Image: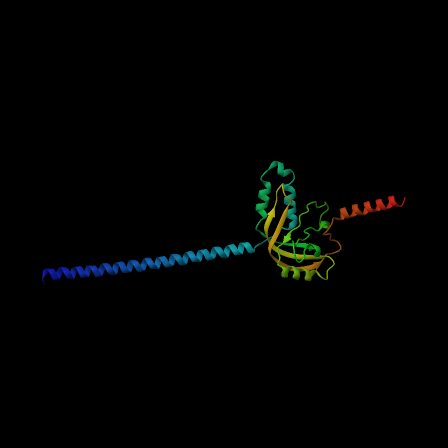
Length: 219
Protein backbone atom coordinates (compact mmCIF):
# COMPACT_ATOMS: atom_id res chain seq x y z
CA UNK A 1 0.00 0.00 0.00
CA UNK A 2 1.40 3.40 -0.98
CA UNK A 3 2.40 5.62 1.92
CA UNK A 4 -0.03 8.38 0.91
CA UNK A 5 -2.94 5.96 0.87
CA UNK A 6 -1.91 4.53 4.24
CA UNK A 7 -1.72 8.01 5.81
CA UNK A 8 -5.11 8.95 4.33
CA UNK A 9 -6.69 5.85 5.82
CA UNK A 10 -5.22 6.58 9.23
CA UNK A 11 -6.46 10.17 9.07
CA UNK A 12 -9.98 9.02 8.18
CA UNK A 13 -10.00 6.52 11.05
CA UNK A 14 -8.78 9.18 13.47
CA UNK A 15 -11.38 11.64 12.27
CA UNK A 16 -14.18 9.12 12.66
CA UNK A 17 -12.93 8.22 16.13
CA UNK A 18 -12.78 11.86 17.17
CA UNK A 19 -16.24 12.48 15.74
CA UNK A 20 -17.70 9.60 17.66
CA UNK A 21 -16.03 10.81 20.84
CA UNK A 22 -17.37 14.33 20.38
CA UNK A 23 -20.84 13.00 19.61
CA UNK A 24 -20.87 10.82 22.70
CA UNK A 25 -19.60 13.69 24.83
CA UNK A 26 -22.26 16.03 23.43
CA UNK A 27 -25.04 13.50 24.07
CA UNK A 28 -23.84 12.96 27.65
CA UNK A 29 -23.67 16.70 28.25
CA UNK A 30 -27.19 17.12 26.85
CA UNK A 31 -28.53 14.37 29.11
CA UNK A 32 -26.88 15.96 32.14
CA UNK A 33 -28.36 19.35 31.23
CA UNK A 34 -31.85 17.86 30.89
CA UNK A 35 -31.50 16.04 34.21
CA UNK A 36 -30.29 19.23 35.90
CA UNK A 37 -33.21 21.19 34.44
CA UNK A 38 -35.70 18.57 35.55
CA UNK A 39 -34.15 18.53 39.03
CA UNK A 40 -34.40 22.33 39.21
CA UNK A 41 -38.03 22.24 38.12
CA UNK A 42 -38.80 19.56 40.71
CA UNK A 43 -37.16 21.60 43.46
CA UNK A 44 -39.02 24.75 42.38
CA UNK A 45 -42.33 22.86 42.35
CA UNK A 46 -41.58 21.42 45.78
CA UNK A 47 -40.76 24.90 47.09
CA UNK A 48 -44.02 26.27 45.68
CA UNK A 49 -45.98 23.42 47.26
CA UNK A 50 -44.25 24.04 50.59
CA UNK A 51 -45.03 27.75 50.38
CA UNK A 52 -48.69 27.10 49.63
CA UNK A 53 -48.88 24.58 52.46
CA UNK A 54 -47.33 27.07 54.89
CA UNK A 55 -49.76 29.79 53.79
CA UNK A 56 -52.69 27.43 54.30
CA UNK A 57 -51.71 26.60 57.89
CA UNK A 58 -54.06 28.28 60.36
CA UNK A 59 -52.31 29.95 63.28
CA UNK A 60 -54.00 28.79 66.52
CA UNK A 61 -53.74 32.22 68.21
CA UNK A 62 -57.03 34.08 68.57
CA UNK A 63 -57.89 37.79 68.65
CA UNK A 64 -57.59 37.85 72.42
CA UNK A 65 -53.95 36.79 72.15
CA UNK A 66 -53.46 39.67 69.70
CA UNK A 67 -55.25 41.99 72.12
CA UNK A 68 -52.87 40.99 74.93
CA UNK A 69 -49.82 41.43 72.67
CA UNK A 70 -50.92 44.94 71.65
CA UNK A 71 -51.78 46.01 75.20
CA UNK A 72 -48.40 44.81 76.44
CA UNK A 73 -46.53 46.38 73.53
CA UNK A 74 -48.22 49.75 73.96
CA UNK A 75 -47.91 49.68 77.74
CA UNK A 76 -44.86 49.63 79.94
CA UNK A 77 -42.84 47.57 77.46
CA UNK A 78 -42.90 50.41 74.91
CA UNK A 79 -40.64 52.55 77.07
CA UNK A 80 -38.31 49.63 77.77
CA UNK A 81 -38.14 48.21 74.24
CA UNK A 82 -38.71 50.75 71.42
CA UNK A 83 -38.66 47.98 68.81
CA UNK A 84 -41.49 46.01 70.34
CA UNK A 85 -44.26 47.34 68.05
CA UNK A 86 -42.52 46.33 64.78
CA UNK A 87 -41.70 42.96 66.33
CA UNK A 88 -45.28 42.29 67.39
CA UNK A 89 -46.47 43.28 63.92
CA UNK A 90 -43.99 40.92 62.25
CA UNK A 91 -45.16 38.08 64.49
CA UNK A 92 -48.76 38.45 63.26
CA UNK A 93 -48.72 39.90 59.74
CA UNK A 94 -49.31 37.56 56.73
CA UNK A 95 -50.46 34.70 58.92
CA UNK A 96 -53.79 32.95 58.61
CA UNK A 97 -56.24 32.92 61.50
CA UNK A 98 -59.67 31.55 62.31
CA UNK A 99 -61.70 33.66 64.72
CA UNK A 100 -65.25 34.02 65.97
CA UNK A 101 -66.45 37.62 65.60
CA UNK A 102 -69.78 39.40 65.76
CA UNK A 103 -71.41 40.91 62.69
CA UNK A 104 -73.39 44.13 62.86
CA UNK A 105 -75.27 44.53 59.53
CA UNK A 106 -74.84 48.31 59.70
CA UNK A 107 -71.05 47.86 59.75
CA UNK A 108 -70.92 45.61 56.69
CA UNK A 109 -73.07 47.06 53.93
CA UNK A 110 -72.96 46.65 50.17
CA UNK A 111 -70.32 49.39 49.86
CA UNK A 112 -67.58 50.77 52.07
CA UNK A 113 -65.65 48.89 54.72
CA UNK A 114 -66.98 45.64 56.12
CA UNK A 115 -65.90 45.52 59.77
CA UNK A 116 -66.74 43.12 62.56
CA UNK A 117 -66.80 43.23 66.36
CA UNK A 118 -63.84 41.14 67.55
CA UNK A 119 -64.44 40.78 71.29
CA UNK A 120 -66.94 39.12 73.57
CA UNK A 121 -66.53 41.54 76.48
CA UNK A 122 -68.22 39.11 78.82
CA UNK A 123 -65.36 36.65 78.35
CA UNK A 124 -63.08 38.76 80.56
CA UNK A 125 -63.43 40.23 84.01
CA UNK A 126 -61.33 43.28 83.13
CA UNK A 127 -62.73 45.77 80.61
CA UNK A 128 -61.42 45.55 77.06
CA UNK A 129 -60.24 49.03 76.11
CA UNK A 130 -58.85 48.29 72.65
CA UNK A 131 -61.24 49.62 70.02
CA UNK A 132 -59.93 48.21 66.74
CA UNK A 133 -62.39 46.51 64.39
CA UNK A 134 -61.03 43.99 61.86
CA UNK A 135 -61.95 44.65 58.23
CA UNK A 136 -63.01 41.74 56.05
CA UNK A 137 -61.94 42.01 52.42
CA UNK A 138 -65.09 40.64 50.77
CA UNK A 139 -66.65 41.00 47.35
CA UNK A 140 -70.21 42.28 46.99
CA UNK A 141 -71.46 38.72 46.52
CA UNK A 142 -69.56 37.50 49.58
CA UNK A 143 -70.99 40.35 51.68
CA UNK A 144 -74.49 39.48 50.55
CA UNK A 145 -73.95 35.81 51.41
CA UNK A 146 -72.60 36.76 54.85
CA UNK A 147 -75.54 39.02 55.59
CA UNK A 148 -77.95 36.29 54.49
CA UNK A 149 -76.33 33.89 56.97
CA UNK A 150 -77.16 36.34 59.74
CA UNK A 151 -80.54 37.52 58.48
CA UNK A 152 -82.58 35.45 60.94
CA UNK A 153 -80.27 35.99 63.92
CA UNK A 154 -80.84 38.89 66.31
CA UNK A 155 -77.17 38.89 67.31
CA UNK A 156 -74.95 37.07 64.85
CA UNK A 157 -71.55 35.52 65.58
CA UNK A 158 -69.64 34.34 62.52
CA UNK A 159 -66.78 31.88 62.24
CA UNK A 160 -64.29 33.43 59.79
CA UNK A 161 -60.87 32.44 58.52
CA UNK A 162 -58.55 34.84 56.75
CA UNK A 163 -55.01 36.07 56.19
CA UNK A 164 -53.93 39.10 58.20
CA UNK A 165 -52.66 41.03 55.18
CA UNK A 166 -52.77 44.57 56.56
CA UNK A 167 -51.80 45.46 60.13
CA UNK A 168 -51.18 49.04 61.29
CA UNK A 169 -49.50 49.09 64.69
CA UNK A 170 -47.76 52.27 65.77
CA UNK A 171 -47.89 55.10 68.27
CA UNK A 172 -48.92 57.61 65.61
CA UNK A 173 -51.96 55.92 64.04
CA UNK A 174 -54.87 53.90 65.44
CA UNK A 175 -54.48 50.14 65.30
CA UNK A 176 -56.16 48.65 62.23
CA UNK A 177 -56.10 45.30 60.48
CA UNK A 178 -57.59 43.64 57.42
CA UNK A 179 -58.28 39.97 56.79
CA UNK A 180 -58.07 38.89 53.15
CA UNK A 181 -58.84 35.62 51.35
CA UNK A 182 -61.70 35.23 53.81
CA UNK A 183 -63.62 32.00 54.28
CA UNK A 184 -66.84 31.99 56.33
CA UNK A 185 -67.22 28.63 58.05
CA UNK A 186 -70.53 29.31 59.74
CA UNK A 187 -72.78 31.58 61.77
CA UNK A 188 -74.67 31.22 65.05
CA UNK A 189 -76.76 33.27 67.42
CA UNK A 190 -74.93 34.94 70.27
CA UNK A 191 -75.76 33.45 73.64
CA UNK A 192 -77.30 35.42 76.50
CA UNK A 193 -74.00 35.24 78.36
CA UNK A 194 -72.06 36.94 75.55
CA UNK A 195 -71.62 40.68 75.11
CA UNK A 196 -70.00 41.59 71.78
CA UNK A 197 -70.85 45.29 71.71
CA UNK A 198 -70.19 46.52 75.24
CA UNK A 199 -68.73 45.11 78.43
CA UNK A 200 -71.11 44.16 81.23
CA UNK A 201 -69.22 46.53 83.52
CA UNK A 202 -69.75 49.47 81.17
CA UNK A 203 -73.37 48.45 80.71
CA UNK A 204 -73.84 48.32 84.49
CA UNK A 205 -72.23 51.75 84.90
CA UNK A 206 -74.43 53.15 82.14
CA UNK A 207 -77.50 51.71 83.83
CA UNK A 208 -76.46 53.21 87.16
CA UNK A 209 -75.82 56.59 85.55
CA UNK A 210 -79.23 56.51 83.86
CA UNK A 211 -80.88 55.63 87.18
CA UNK A 212 -79.07 58.52 88.88
CA UNK A 213 -80.23 60.96 86.19
CA UNK A 214 -83.81 59.70 86.49
CA UNK A 215 -83.68 60.12 90.29
CA UNK A 216 -82.51 63.71 89.92
CA UNK A 217 -85.31 64.48 87.49
CA UNK A 218 -87.92 63.08 89.88
CA UNK A 219 -86.89 65.36 92.74
